[in-house]
Amino acid sequence: MSLVRLNIKGISYSQTQNGAYALILNEVDGERKLPIVIGAFEAQSIAIALEKEIRPPRPLTHDLFKNFADRFDIVVKQVIIHKLVDGVFFSSLICERDKIEEIIDARTSDAIALALRFDAPIFTYKNILDKAGIYLKVNPTKDDEDESTEDSVLVDDLMASELEPAPRENYASKTLEELENLLDEAVANEDYEKAAHIRDEISKRK
Image (cartoon, rainbow, N blue to C red; front, side, top):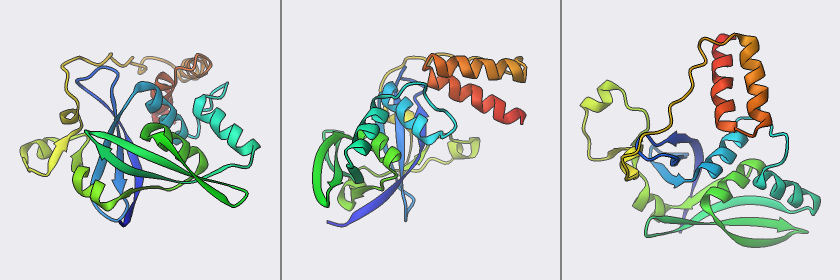
């Protein structure tokens, strides 16, 4: 079976299911997306790895794994999403130590969090992408909403509940100095979702 390389397009917060996130993987040589529903902790860990500017004061679980692997010369060479059963994706870490390759079973969210930290490529099999890949609209515009196509689906169509997300704090009234202090405080408290929002506001001002 042929492998298809995937890139991380982003993480989308569910507008209907509180605390749920969709990790969006993008087909490198195509238009299809592979959305995977993940938990808040895994979403936070992946977001931190994507945002190089935010550094936790203490290592998170995936950072600890990376430090441990580095100490013992273990390298994660690639991640393969190899199976899809009842909506659950199964993944493998392809690791190498002393030129000996090992395959380790992993949850897909953990595997991708580690792939980012090891700069390892992410793959899936073509038949999985054929089965689960979709043309996804993450943040639809009005024009998108007017166009109804059978091949398009919104992130929240993947998640089933009618709960409202927690409101995001408004930082527009804060000064740049106040935002910098809030950012330091959020990182110290390991509230990385809040830190990302504050960083976005700071970036808009600069």
